[in-house]
Amino acid sequence: MADLNRPAGDNSIIEEPRKIPEMLNVLTILTFIGSGLGIVSALWGFARAKASYDQLASMNLDQMPDFAKRMMGNDPVEMARRSLENRLPILLLSLIGCALCIYGAIQMRKLKKTGYTFYVLGEVLPIITSAIFLGTGALMGFGGIIGTIIVLVFIILYASQLKYLR
Image (cartoon, rainbow, N blue to C red; front, side, top):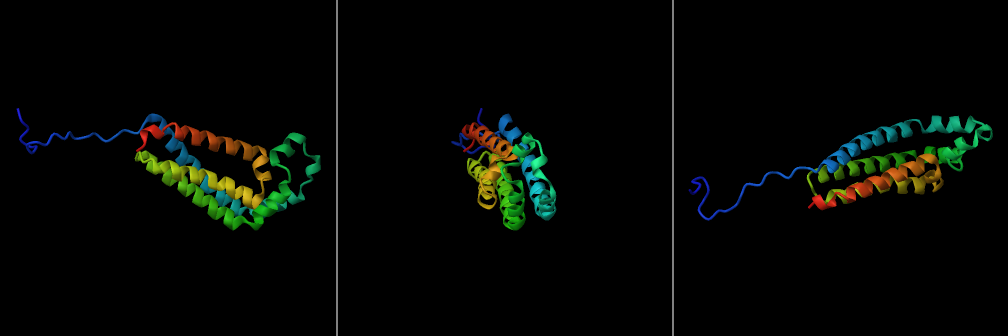
């Protein structure tokens, strides 16, 4: 029997909204959490740049154990000085990076492929910012290496979800 509510010849079927794949859902939630922490961290780093430099400059780093020195990178006092001098551009670029990640995650939750591009730009921007303003030594410390690994893992995990995006 014909449907009286549908015009004759209209064979369209009402589509259900596409559901977000579970892995993509988890990744975007983790991105929101990580970006929120990134915003807080950027603001904290900006506010505490002078105190961090003063604290590191007053420490006797020669008496520290070797593992602690390696965790801090090649020259932590110099990095703290550069962080202090460049705290405003570092803050702004970090906030832009976090905003790009959030925007990208929102777009990917809408199943839009362009969100991945914004996300990757948002993840890579702080790494480039660190290399430019602090030097590549900032990426060679324990925190820099772990942070870069986490970024790469998330980029790869999101790439595995591209098949669900249009």
